[in-house]
Image 1 (cartoon, rainbow, N blue to C red):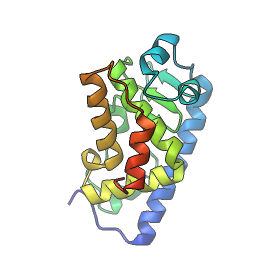
Image 2 (cartoon, helix red, strand yellow):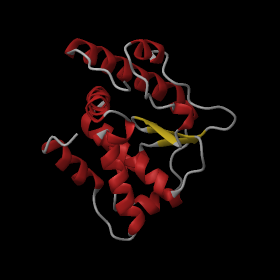
Image 3 (cartoon, rainbow, N blue to C red):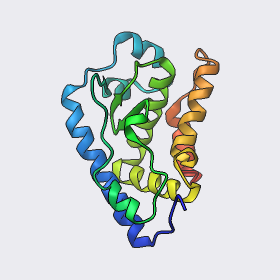
Length: 180
């Protein structure tokens, strides 16, 4: 079994741990993050509001990887066998901080900025809760609605990077329709 059935209390506990991890990682990396370059901002303008683009920090790690959360062994004991390996991910977003293991492409940056917008609309705690619930409901990373939406919007951007749309409106619609 890759994804166990958890009680409401266990889901709340795991969501709180994920939220704490996001806060801690954001605080660790934020000091090292330069802002988006003018070129990156210009590419993303029209999709994201200027205040979001101005408030994002990005960093590409060189020589090390983001470590898996310290609570992963506890999750394994609970029956999780399909946890995503953070060291294998191209990039990870912690609120308004994007940490990458690979060079930033426009597509990768766009995907991660969708997550920044999701965090902005939901807050870290709610994002973490929806991420955990999506993982449990969908049976793994690929079915988490927050990821599904980010990948979908990213594909739309990559298919037509000059066809502007407001990511914030798309995220808000999914929130209002309870699609996350």
